[in-house]
Length: 268
Image 1 (cartoon, rainbow, N blue to C red):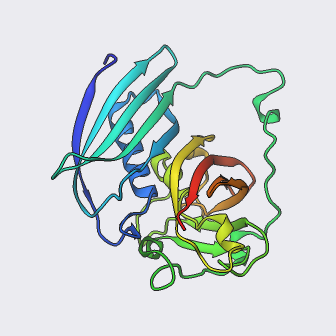
Image 2 (image 1 turned 90 degrees about the horizontal axis):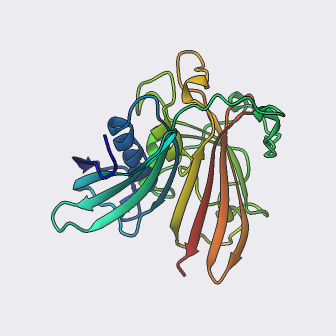
Image 3 (image 1 turned 90 degrees about the vertical axis):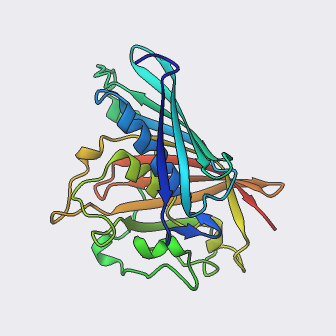
């Protein structure tokens, strides 16, 4: 399989996964990663995705076009476009990087390189479930499990969010996470400045970049189900209505799973 190789498929965007007019952003993120996993050799694991969603991804038929942009000895880069079927408009585009396991002998070991700190929070089993969905939350929230630790929107004093998140068995059966699920779930929580705002202003993600920093199979299941993940997010700064938000997902034992940077625009 050489550079320029293209694969095409169709995707019926399901109902009940909306965030506003279009689908929750995690849904096309997940689909783009899944497409690459289907096309790529098993030895090349998903490492990162950078994506933009310029149009609402509406319920209905779409075309998904995946193209191998670059294939090196250790990594590949794919471009994935999602197009509305009826008018061929690109509604989402992503660049997905895959790579082989380098098995490097580092000095000091790679475990010593990380500087991100696991937040001091109560374990998931000590945090109550909070229903998220209509009429106060987005439609897609009904499919996920939220255990908020920090205050709910408009009820806090800092633009910081901590809480446990999971993809429950009632939504999708499975004992382990996969790459596509993990890279989508980092987008599942409300923006961290909502905690601080007096009223929730409409916002839109302008750009999305996420790195997968663990082999999903190494996230141990709990009682035969997927482990909950700690969502950890904060706003770095805002300028001219555009903010930079850093999001992380952690395992219960403190391993960093996904790191995500989003540029988010406050619409009005």
